Length: 211
Image (cartoon, rainbow, N blue to C red; front, side, top):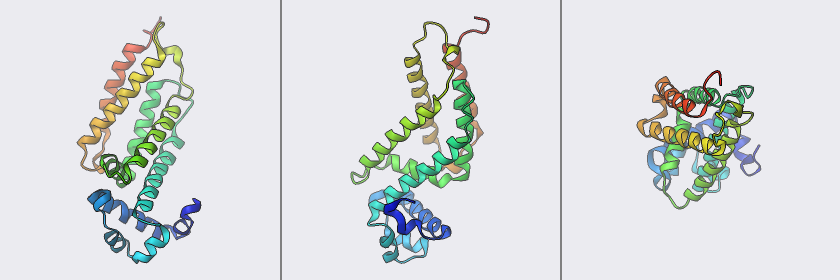
């Protein structure tokens, strides 16, 4: 339990979820600056005094949602990854399939993070950028844990190859994100297209069979 959010996290699960879902809905619809706590409490079925009993202010609530949504994603993606898989492209494919399942289960969480990434409010943008850097660094660390680099061709610069793979992954994810109005629309087509990019990268970096 997070100490500063003890009061909120002491609530029954159903009430926590009502407040979280109401807040996510309002922030996605209106953005941070225009989001109304009146709308949030109305949707959640609580008093405004109760909301500010759990959170000091709107910014506090928003930052809690950032931490909460990122934690849900991490708990649901990386706990299911088979880290005995040492092929980098198989590992990425595995993460992609798991992430798709999480997207379809929790589309509102990804919608919130997409909205947060596009939100330029100076009150919350620095915190989002910092959390994004931390999450990417931790994610890449997990993606590349235990990878068999001997599959790469002799003379290939592994560090630069990893940069190219990272840039391709991030660029592809950004392109696909812009296509979606909501993550509830995410489907297997995204994975099939990524597989085609992965095959191109593999042909560039991997040894030819028999070498």
